[in-house]
Image 1: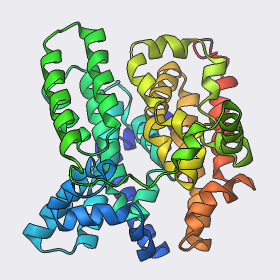
Image 2: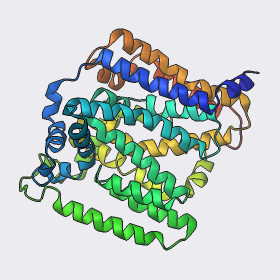
Image 3: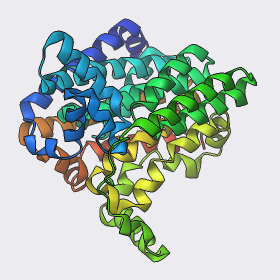
Image 4: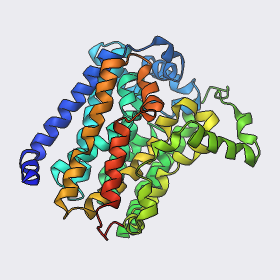
Length: 394
């Protein structure tokens, strides 16, 4: 009875409207809770601002930042044609692309023949379970992060469903957004070849590689300064890295960022069969994760952002796998559909109690110290995984 009600009233149209409303509500709450701190603009954001003010700075700022010119270029266009100041241009684009991201990932889940109501819940699980994406709504100069998620989804979808033109276009956009997306582009093309065995995609890939090499050469061409980074920390012995891993995962409790999804690899053999078709893309998903753990002293407080820029891809495939396995069990599907309700505990607490930096502190520390929505979510997720007695899962 409940299942029929959910399927009837959470069709594609209603799901999209709700996602749009949730996106708008998130933006509203972020502005209610948080006023952007100008001090943040003295960090990486200052380079994005320099680029947005004058595109010629592409040749003069640090190469690592110049390689990420696309977000600032879009802001430059808004500022030039609409005469909106740089801060508000970042803000407008950030909000538009955030809502677009929610809608885009919904259709991505639908590509795997997942029902609208389940795709709706999957989007909320993916982007509201942690603060990696929502943080970008608070810190509007992190437009780069939002675009990274969007372009990653387009590239992966194009690779899996053999959309050559889309894969080429979004690969070009990606390599001008975040330098390590170049690896996703290469592996996605190889994954496409692995599935479809069509040699013509290598012409596109050769052109993309050429464009990236030219971009890499010209970015920061006239800047001879080294990017500020503690390179001494990268020359330590092996014991140093083991200490970093331990500190990252257990002292700072960052292993909780990987739970409860990671349990599916210990208790499900079929997940590996499912992932085999996408193994090159899955390999890429680990690339931001492993360095962010091993070189934790370089990542520090940005761990929650950096690791998820790859890990979210693995979470997508885990959710698709889980949904496919429980697709005939209406009770478990209902449990899965209702999972995002557990987040309301956290968001109500945030709305009533938190201002400014408290948002980060809550997600990084406080929600692990009492029976928060995180634990309710994890318990129900693990219940779906273990207690179902469904041999397809266990």
